Amino acid sequence: MKSLLLNLKHIQHSYGQQMIVNNLSLTLEKGAIGCLLGPSGCGKTTVLRCIAGFEPISSGEIFINDIRVSSTNSSLPPEKRRIGMVFQDYALFPHLTVAANINFGLHQLAKNDRKLRVDELLQTVGLTNDANKYPHELSGGQQQRVALARALAPKPDLLLLDEPFSNLDVSLREQLSLEVRDIIKNQGTTAILVTHDQHEAFALADEIGVMNQGEIQQLDSAYNLYHRPANRFVANFIGQGVFVLGKVLAPNQIKIELGVLSGDVPPHCLDKCSICGKGCYVDVLLRPDDIIHDDASSLQAIVMHKAFRGAEILYTLCLGDGSTVLSLVPSHHNHTIGEKIGIKLEADHVVAFN
Image: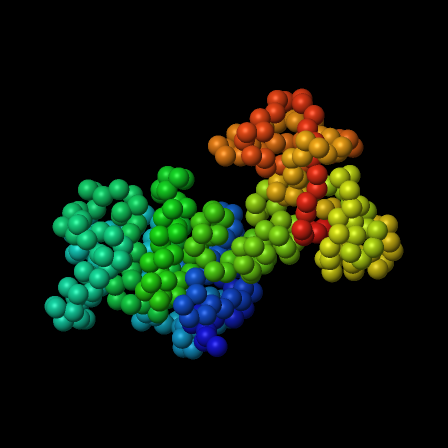
């Protein structure tokens, strides 16, 4: 059984009268990569700054390796917390070479040990041939790898990454997210990432906490956040989808315009139905991958909009009752606006809200 490296217990932080982080708890096992995901202003970066010791907490406790580093009455200085940090703007020293940047935090080691550690990390991040270059001679992705190597060099107990890919092109972000994950795992480091980009979170993190208004709405795997959202905020924030009206037929059946969905109706829906009885109405979430294009289907929908995405086209379809759904279809099925196409429902998970 893995032991906990990070433990946040009911922490709060305010700016004046405004509550930014509200009674938030979070744990992270050694060797795991966690993520705080949410829109701008939700408090995720403030949580990271509280962990780092840059911000005080007004209540609760923060433990790193079972050592209490923050409480209402005490706070261990940032430099004593054995934390590495990768900033949004990389914060590299422009007058130092790549090797010198990585070497910066290794003053406590002997000269030969410093060189061995720098060489190891240059190889790990794929920059061995760029050791003598300066930051301005590197691409954004290369600068990010230098910043990561510098943060990892002293072998911190915990690595914090604050929106680390926001300055990069969208096409580079997911690729670099996967590379960074491999590097962190290769080093055996525990890390926590803050981002508003769910694709980065999915590519990098083992576990993701979706935040809103200073609170974690759901802490789960990417798969469960997408297919089993805990509430409407998570359902709307993660992925794409639309809500359609449904009628509860039984504890495991909901009827919608496209047919009958079979599966475990979520408990919060059943709680409501125990009051109003069978036949109550709910909102059912349908994802684009729940609606399958099928020329042989008798169920027809009208193409209202289309967004070409290379290998796929995202269609907005109008159903017979006037409601709309999304469908992700291979792009060789290229239909025109106003055309009727056959569809069928293939939803493996029932996501419904009162």
